[in-house]
Length: 100
Image 1 (cartoon, rainbow, N blue to C red):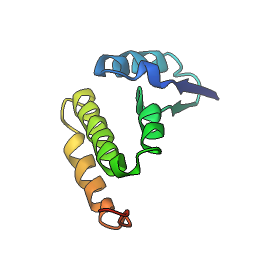
Image 2 (cartoon, rainbow, N blue to C red):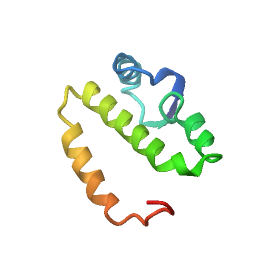
Image 3 (tube, helix red, strand yellow):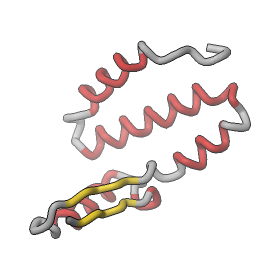
Image 4 (cartoon, helix red, strand yellow):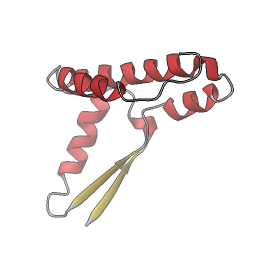
């Protein structure tokens, strides 16, 4: 078994995902587990809003949109709509934050 960790700094644009996929394909003889970090800068952005909670909802929404945009680009638009509607349905059960 092989574990491959993908860092956030190499997850900055759609071409990176195609390169990552090509590298993972080289290990077809092994069982592969892929572990990924957050997209580039997401961890830092989340840490920044811990000091500005009034901006948290806006920042998280922006981060989610960035992920959907990346998913749409990587999948040529095939997966994004389905993933987006599934996620939006799950948000309905989220608790409201103060100030929402």
